Length: 328
Image (cartoon, rainbow, N blue to C red; front, side, top):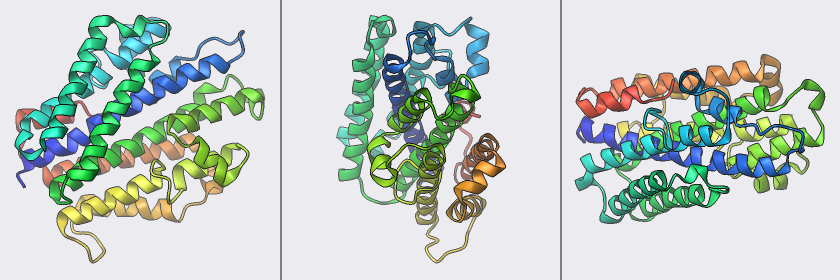
């Protein structure tokens, strides 16, 4: 496969996953607002922090008024990681490799792009309840995933898209967990209170994990939530699961099915997967959850950089655009 094609397929997976995560974060935050005490201000600041674009937001905006935050996350063309920007880039990558996509995938990606354009024209972020729009975007992306799952051959292109999707998902799970631990809770005195419970519940719902968590653990406790979202071996949005699946993708791409590693990407992701596989939640909390998650994000970024150097050696304009719009 041409490196140009592989690069576009990889970033198609990352951009779609990023937009889908933003849609679900916004939806869950709205639901959380309805349950907060009336004397507690709406908490939109953590949503910006979760994306890693807090510095850019503070350069452009003053305060964290709801409509400002929704526009920045959803429709701001000057924010390279907004839903509008990532969906536009996903469509552009799909256009470049259109001959490698089936008809249905291209059509649904195109529909998604025009869905965002319609939302921009109608200024849906100003509506009293914009949740139906973001739910529609999320479902459209899930539809694209479903079409791919049922119709795309499991060859190199499939594994590059999955690789991008899983690395992006691992990054987003770590970010939303990090923000809850450090920003959402107003004060240490609130730990263990109903407000604390509401926040952990909202976090689990943001990754569609609430019902699965309750079946496994019952009561909501912070250590159990951390264990579930970081180390669970079966939940498809846990960090460990995403890294394990991303490693499988790399091995299938390189043909290395006998173990070990054949390139720097496989070495780096194998080391990270091994550390997660044998980690214990007590060690993570003892190390410091924020510090642990920050280290994870840096390692995921390093893996992405290795993927670029190992497989995407042709630096054409689209490749450069994709690299510059990756999150730090």
